[in-house]
Length: 88
Image 1 (cartoon, one colour):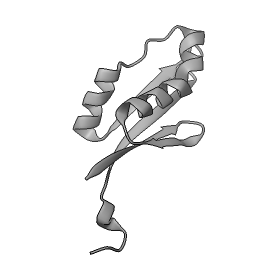
Image 2 (cartoon, one colour):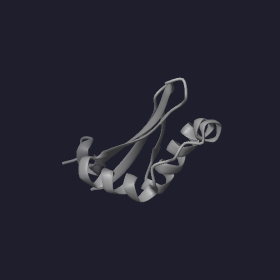
Image 3 (cartoon, rainbow, N blue to C red):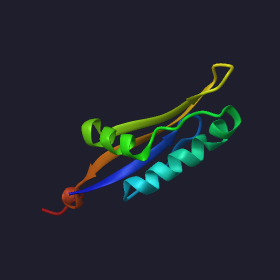
Image 4 (cartoon, helix red, strand yellow):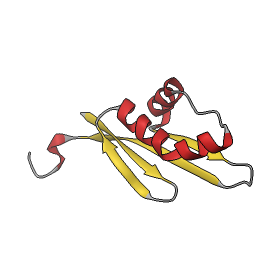
């Protein structure tokens, strides 16, 4: 069974589907990057995201700016079974 990683943005919906955690993490960071730079925020580390994905199959990277506006990117780990679509 393969696991795919779906990245969604709080304002834009699905940002991409990735075959590995690192690609999904990079896309999530790219999405929140503008807020990180403008507000000097601290970002969740790659290792923490990986551990969270192992435990509950989703992780969130979120930023809250000085005015209380929030932007986040979520990563969902979805098990993908190749035999799901019609083959027995």
